[in-house]
Length: 215
Picture 1: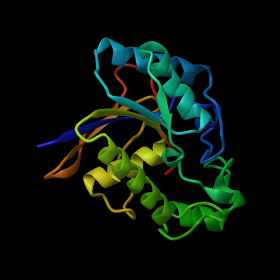
Picture 2: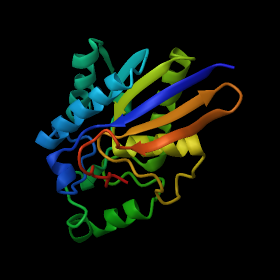
Picture 3: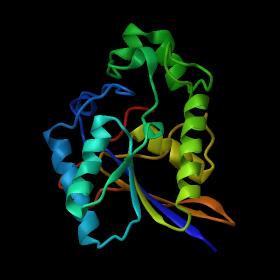
Picture 4: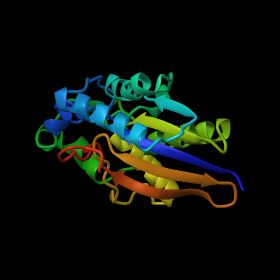
C-alpha cells in the first residue's frame, strides 16, 4: 500500500500576526521573531534527520522566507506554488479582528458565521477556497505518490487541509490550532485516503507561537 506523508508547516510570525490582523493575500514579511522561528523549524528538521523528497511553498513572502530557512540548511530548492496561498479575505484584509466588526460588521458576520458562499467583497468564498486547496493537495499527492513532502503555507490553508484530512465540514467551527512555524502531519494511503497523523507540534520553538486568526 502506497503511503504519502506531508509535513505541513505554517510560516513564521509577522507583525500583522502579532497585531491580530487579517493578512490573506497581503504580502507581509516575517518579523524578527518569525525569522528566528523559521531557523528553529529548519534546524529541528535537520536534528531529526528527516528525509524528505520535495519542498513546496506558497508564493507569499512570509511563507517563502520561512521555506528559505530549509533551503539554506538542506541545500535544496523550493517549488513555489501560488495555489498554496492563504484565503483572500476581500474587504477584511488589513483589518484586525477588533477593527473588522466595527468597520465592516456585515462582512465580518458572514466571515465568523462561515457563510460558505460569501466572497467577503472581492475575496474568496469558503467553497472557492476549499476547492483550490483540495485541488492543490490532490495534485501534489498524485505527483509525489509514496514520497515525504514538506509544504510551507498559511494558517487558513492548513486548517482547510486539516478539514480535508479529518472529514470536518466546511461550516463547522475551527477545532485545529495552527501556530506559527508548527509541524502538522497528514498522510495519504491508497485505501484510506487522507488522515491526520500529528498536529500543532511546536516543541522545536523557544517560547509560545501565535495561533492563526485567519479563520
